[in-house]
Amino acid sequence: MKILIADDHQYMINSLKTIVNYAFEDVKTIHFVEAQNCKTAIFEINAFSAANENFDLAILDFSMPADTEKNILNGGDVCLFLREKMPSCKTLIFTAHLEDLILLDIDHKVKPDALIIKSDVKPEELITICSDVVVKGKKYSSPTVIEKKDKMWIEEIFTKESNRKIVELLSKGYKIKEIASELLLTEVAIQKRLAKIKQGLNITDDSSILREVKRRGYV
Image (cartoon, rainbow, N blue to C red; front, side, top):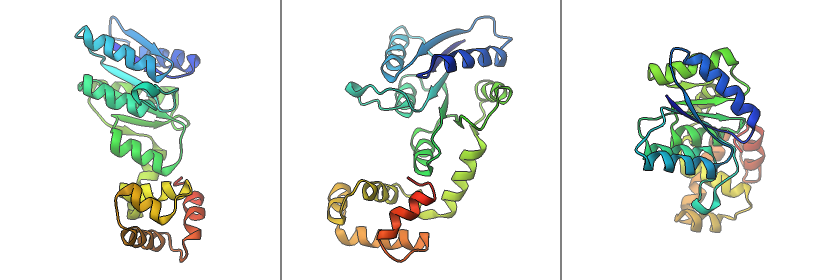
């Protein structure tokens, strides 16, 4: 069994290796490949692919030093790259992020086999999760992820990527005209979307949008 573990903290890599050994204690040989940043992870994936070898499991920290040359900015990008090279590899993403929009983007765009908030699971639970994902082909989201996804589905305005992008650009100081230009929409369309966002947030003025989405943990 070949397993890629990518995390920018060596102690975390060591802990994960111990957990994986327990999860697959019946496996005679486990070959671990370590990476502490996105660049090394991409290098190892390419090296294995060039040798016609595949990883069986990749455990990726979402927040790692980026590979800016290849525009691989986080563990989510590594996961997408890996899936192109090795579609059969099971993927598990760890993150400390609790922001709703980030979690929703990981869940919708990256679609890992398991998405775990680091503070959510104990080592003994992770042993079972790894086994279930690889051996049984199960999907897993940790409790905080499920809770936040449920809340986001209730507030449907944020299940649309374009609406999330509008809020993101607002948080960066973009004006309506600039947002329209960035998203290739008319200013009228942006105003209509903002009206829906305000309605969903139960607020009445534009100036309250950022305050409210920050209060709710969307950005």
